[in-house]
Image (cartoon, rainbow, N blue to C red; front, side, top):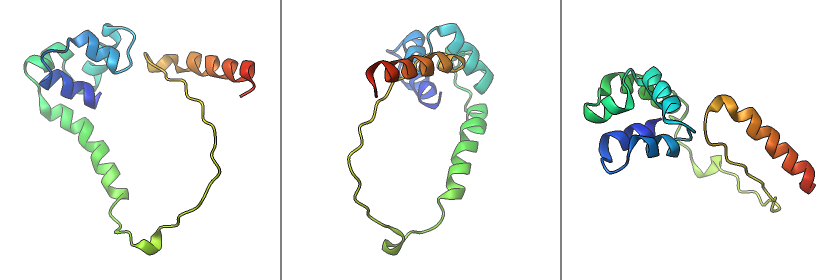
Length: 117
């Protein structure tokens, strides 16, 4: 959503539907609802006249939480380099409504069983 809000505010050449799809939504209306719920403005209104105050209230919380865990200064003594054997990794991307992630997981499990992965 953070990237989508930047695209809305600064990328006039990209339509809202494309931004919604890039953000992983299957339909623009699902993106519109989620965006409005999170930032208090529709994507179209945000594009015309972004209200950054509610946006910062949402996004700023995440930045503040992250900075609390990253305040320690690390020294070379804090780092350990370990050799590891290469491990094959399989990835299935989920695009769309987050509520539908279960279906993606089921397809991934079925693929793993079918291929012996």
